Image (cartoon, rainbow, N blue to C red; front, top):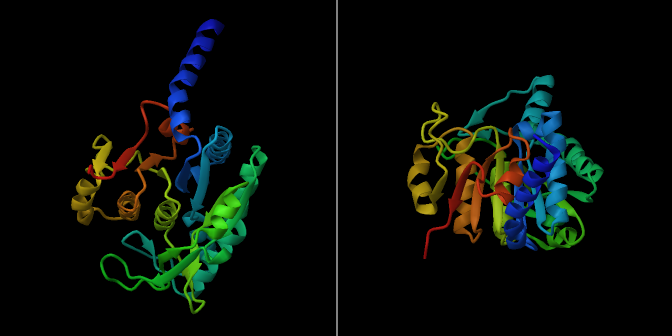
Length: 290
């Protein structure tokens, strides 16, 4: 390819992005950060660069993260049992202490530092800061007792809106109840709750699959778009880690968020492709038409 054709391609890409930049300018986009994008060194750098770019063009990103692989690694090192039910980590008191230590003390600060290095200022928060998340204990969708796993009953956006005026908030998915009990909160649920509370324009879930597959064993069965009603009808048949993501998508669009998207975080710059190109990425869930 000649230098001239390179230049033409670059200009076409910018022109394609322009209407999306205009549409999203000044809007809040909540990004659930997880999967390979959190563990692969190259993808981590690209994620931070993409978030910085999103902020530079006038969009307000809010990052919500878990840290499943790192939590599991620390638990195994401490000889603690690792168990999941319906895609949710079974969490006794010792597990919750490890979760808080890893998510708040390490993973959160690593993400903040990474974004800072790429030219934007980030601030780390968790559900305890400013009573951001008020939680209650929940069971698994199947009814099984999974310990100190919290459902977010309330999001107090006061501290979050204050921070977001000047910084990129990075939120670790832990919280507590009125009695001071700590809870491990599923990061997908936390992202959905934050998006609803902020009346975000869009919520994006980075994951390690191309999107919602009609048949999990068939990579060609991608569902590119679905309404809230279609998702609600299909949800009882969804299992594993995709279930909490789709549940969060459903609750988001039913709670006023315009669209929720499941994005393949293994693909470089998947956030930018979804936000700024006609092709988009993954699976888009939209509210039912009035």
